[in-house]
Image 1 (cartoon, rainbow, N blue to C red):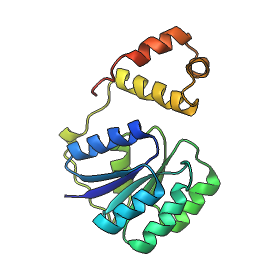
Image 2 (image 1 turned 90 degrees about the vertical axis):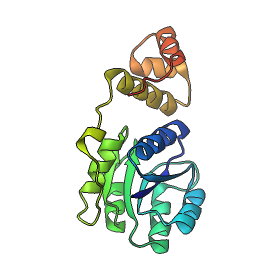
Image 3 (image 1 turned 135 degrees about the vertical axis):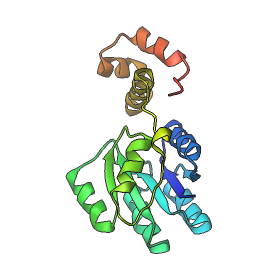
Image 4 (image 1 turned 30 degrees about the vertical axis):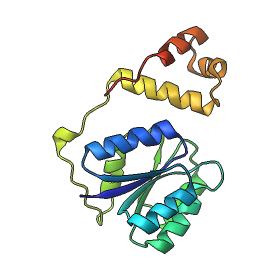
Length: 177
C-alpha cells in the first residue's frame, strides 16, 4: 500500500483529495500548513506528497526544502493555481516530480507521480473514474469562490453568471462523482 501526504490550506479541496486517495487504497495524512505537514513527515514517513504552492504563512517550496532534508526519497508533486516559470524551475531543481496546475484531480496526480520511474503507483483502470460535468462545474465554482475570498458578487462576475444563480448552485450538495 502506498502512503501519501496532502498539504493544502484549502480544507475542502484537501479533504476531497484525501477521500479519493483513501478510496484507491492509499494511507493518507493531510495537513493545512507546512509545520503540521513536516510533523507528519517525521512521524509517518510517507512515500509521496502532494503540496500546494501558495499558502498563508510558509509556502509549499519551504515544505519541499525541509521535507527532503528529513526524507530524501520523498516523491513530491506541487499543485498550484498560481504557477510561474520561476517557481516551476525552482521546484524542479529541488527534485519535485511534477508541477501541476489546479484544479487537478486524483487521476491527474497519480499520472504525475507515474512520470517518475522510481515511483510505483498501481491503480486498476476500473478504479479511475471520470468526474461528471456537474462535479467539475461544482469544483470550478468553489475554486473561483475561494480565489475571490468568499465574495459571491465578485465570483459571480468572474464566472459571468448572476449572483443569485451562483447562490443557488452553492446551496446544493456537491455531486458525488
